[in-house]
Amino acid sequence: MKFICDEMLGSLAKWLRILGYDTKYVKNVSDEKIIEIAEKEGRIVLTRDKLLARKSKGIYINERDVEEQLKKVIESLNLDIEEEKILTRCTICNIKVTKIDKDKVKGKVPEYVWNNNEDFWICPSCKRIYWIGSHWNKMEEVIQKLKK
Image (tube, rainbow, N blue to C red; front, side):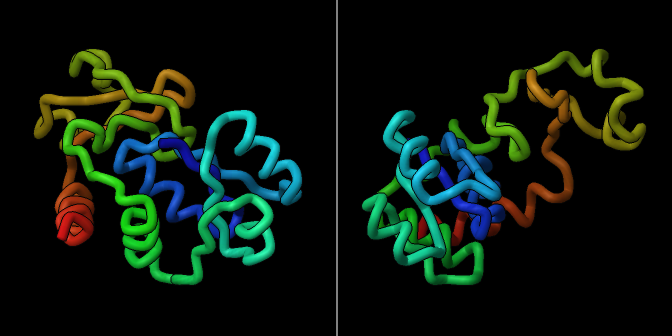
């Protein structure tokens, strides 16, 4: 399942990527163009615009809190949160990340991160490097709440 989020839902797009869903995020794009992209790429429109939701047969997201937005998408589409998909996409550019050898990130991540982690992933597009750091606990907390 793939999504397209309008400019009002940047945090939702990031969280859907964290959960492993292919999620395009667009800014300054007309409703017609969003609908065209969704149809061409087989994406579900997620929007805070009632008219766009109606025109695109997408999902209107009224909720302001990102956890509530996620809950709405998950419940509306009966989505499963699959452990093996979590953290498989770049949160910035939506490309699938790939595992990278620890030695190749030396000097590219803070020294304490390099010393305290064995597993690293990199986005082939933007070159952002990922690891399971202190932020993971908060993310895991949110994910566990969504599973209930």
